[in-house]
Length: 181
Image (cartoon, rainbow, N blue to C red; front, side, top):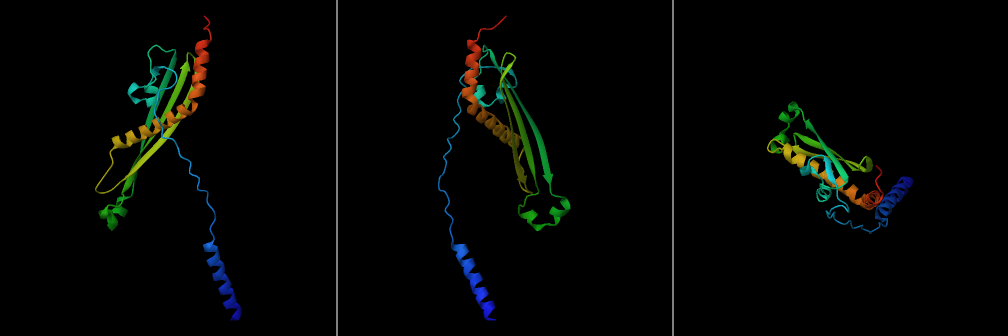
């Protein structure tokens, strides 16, 4: 009996001490700069793609007379998930606005930058957006598509901005090199 009391006391003391220990956590917060859209350090013409569907950095960098060209493509796929009607019809929370399923859109984009036949940059990105629907509200496919397109364009643009110095050097060296007949 005495052993059980001592064991229980030690156990409770260990739990109390264990719960009261604090592990120091780094308070360093890395502030990320907001993405400021700006044109690329060179101009290019649109070889393929829709000019109205370009990431802003590319749209701001278009010129019809540039030897550099852009090829941009987006693809969208839709997905749906529905909770079976037999389950939702009998579940009372359905009538209080519980989700009945969700709709999703995946956007895939690819951007290639060319100088003639030479590829200067090749970028791909993927973004997925999903939203639940209830008995009383349902997202439109258009709003999901717009959100997915916006997300994938932002990812392509971030990749471009990270690589813009290298691209600028490639373009400058390509324009400085004499073209051979």
